[in-house]
Length: 123
Image 1 (cartoon, one colour):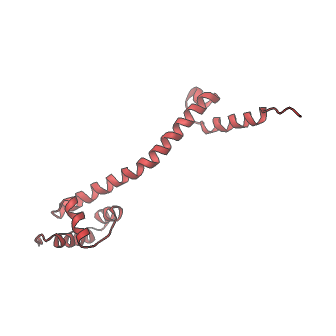
Image 2 (spheres, one colour; image 1 turned 30 degrees about the horizontal axis):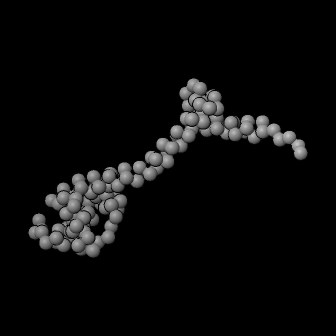
Image 3 (cartoon, one colour; image 1 turned 45 degrees about the horizontal axis):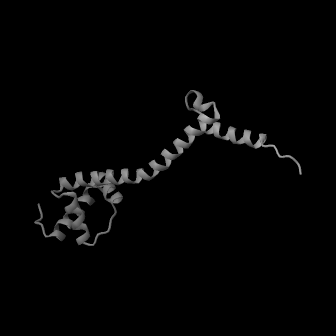
């Protein structure tokens, strides 16, 4: 049986990893072992932060909705409860967009939420 040497495939694997480390500082971008450690760590952070981004956006949307609801004399939880009682199913992303870009539509939603909760309407 012929002897198999792995120099070509190893070099290719090393080169691929070092290319991924392009832009890192010092040995991290030059030496295979350091590059591998750094790239693997970076990939782990990237995966974690892709998951975390969803929660970050949800927090941002809730903050925006809360600020807009306060201008209408409602708290965030009152607004959401009122919309649920009125059977209006809008997600937080859309509500936050309305709060920022279409204040008249958000005001109308807030009035609907107030009436569904049985609160008196402000003129």
